[in-house]
Image (tube, rainbow, N blue to C red; front, side, top):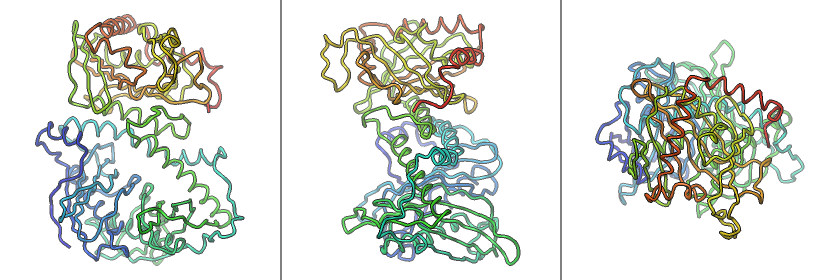
Length: 595
């Protein structure tokens, strides 16, 4: 096995342009590793074993974490990983890791993995992952603009991690998961897929702290999971995704590691395998070290997924695992549909549900932060220090309006976050009603806007028919306070759909992909307020004349906003106003959320 330090990760064109503009400055925590895949690293399909890849990933991420902390670090968890491509013997694996953010006692490390074919000079992305390492917090120094965005968005990913188990429990408790059907004649008994294996932790399996290397534990877990999957499909399966690895405790040299795996559920073209790792010594109880859930597929000669046999779970515990596997599959689909979807996909809005709320909020906030971080905004017009910028990317037009106001940032944040008060200063908001308060930071609103004499997208409504018809939007509003000094307050808006508020003939239903405010504290207790919007067809008519230089309605709207903030800067705090709104709507918004 040969190893070298080099790079050349696959990047989107936009990412390459941004990095070139950021210059040659390198994140001091960045670590790169390159490995050529030898036969000893491969599985029976002559492809790189995922267990070996996880060991390389964990090593690179640990080096990055320790470079940041200046002290030893241990792996606490590894977020879900989706493997987009396999890697063959003879190809090169390039891994890059860097610390995105340090919390009080932990830090998030972002990892990118790509493959390189030395004979054709082709590069392609294999996967990306986020790992959490535990140590004491240290200062990460000055960050580039892109690193600052990653730092900020890391807080949103942390929110997702912390509620993952709660979402599964909620799905199961409300009876939305199908019951086990044990009457399928050709179903394979789950008991036949059971695997139990014991590994003795030797010095070569330990890290420099004499604890069992996290990557080695993950590799052993992948091994027993692959055997369980093979027993069901009677073929060599391909690992596609891994749900979050969470290390619950350490293991040391001399421990016996007991690894158990079983197929929890088999779907049409994929199966979920559950794995549990326990450590024990000659005397003493077993210690739960780690658990993970892995999704496998079986590919035919054309690399297409094959049909899989049904699984018949064991009574009680097996049925529980069977149903939880369905819940996890729903969560994976929610994440793929909400977080990973591209902006060119339609419809823009997705159904809101209490169980996908955390992913919608993540998408809402991170999308606005990413839009704000773009560095190719072009100044379109300016009047009395109110500036209008535009950004054209592919088929998407975005605009930004900004101005400085003589109001503290925290007060401006509280006032602008009260979306129900926006009609008092924004003529584009004719009506704004609170539908449901999700939590302290997320709210659902219905907004009514004046007609712009434009039919709904994809409808056959003529201009004369649409004239005078109002538009309405169902919006998720997510507000976030700064993550650190220099980070702005954020109020993010995006469209969602609610069964309780379907489109009606009286209104043209509009959609907002990404919009909202960022509020940054400036000198002398003032605030720089920026409003962003990725202009969907329903939104573009409101701003098109401003972009063309034919009017300055943006200027008048921002003047009204500034006046509203100035007049109310001392009258009430955000918390007081929230209590007033909630008390006035306590009857209408009480009980379970709209479904």
